[in-house]
Length: 418
Ligand SMILES: [Zn+2]
Image (cartoon, helix red, strand yellow):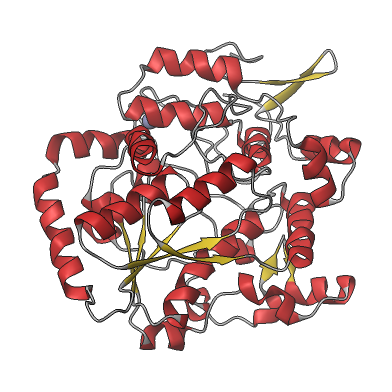
């Protein structure tokens, strides 16, 4: 075990899943409204044999789930909510990526629902992302509501989230989560579907329970204000700072941030909103979603390999995406190739050893393609951003060797301390 200090409440001993290679440093979701630099993070479950919760779930799925019966359940659910009077009956959030294409298509054309698709805009759409979004609406045949948050406020929050948390996607994630509930309330649609289940990534005890088919609005989801307890909205944190402080320092007003704030619980309850994971009812395989989307709407993969990984079709619509994965590599030693390949190992597309090789080759590759735009977006110089990254390297993960930062541990066992 490393003698070095572990920050952010991360496990001191670094382990990689025996099956999929994911690191035990991967955090579970945190309550972002309380998230400050030194917040202790809960990390994913590993059993005593060193297998992660996501793999255990997958195993169980392969072994025990009766997908025919799950599909029946989905039919029953849809029958209960289906509206044939010209109104929408469910909401499907997404950006026009492969997962949202698959989810909306399935609901509309197989389960005969009438979805309204809703989109919380990426920070900066990529060209291919924008084309896929357009194809989703035009070729897929879906109504869509595209919401773009106040660009000045979003930039400010993104900058603060980098400065205080090294988490450039925090405002995006918060906004996107509250957005779905907001749209349900606004359009009087009591049902929404996310795609993949979070259990895919390993819950705290490693097992997905039946009631987790429903998005329960756990704290931090931004579902509603009263789930956060007795708090003053001005004390909630965005980008790691209390809202009242952001307002004082940056001459903003509360209204600038309304798109990021949780809704009042009363409104949510009155509307009886239910949000489900489609991945509970139907088998969710990202690669299959990709082929499906190519077939149905002419979905385009990236013409070039996505930096930091080997894949060409995972989350490619936002120019800032690469920095989400890069910063997670800095904070948790978990890069984009690790995230992509661990999923493919679980879905039996590649082997554990192939996953290791991909991680070794691509993890931590610096995303240069949109770097200039990213720096402009967050208002930092190259030197400032690099220094910020170095500030967040936990000593138990990183060592400086001949002036260069190296991971102490890797799945291939070639880290400095391995
Ligand atoms: Zn695993």
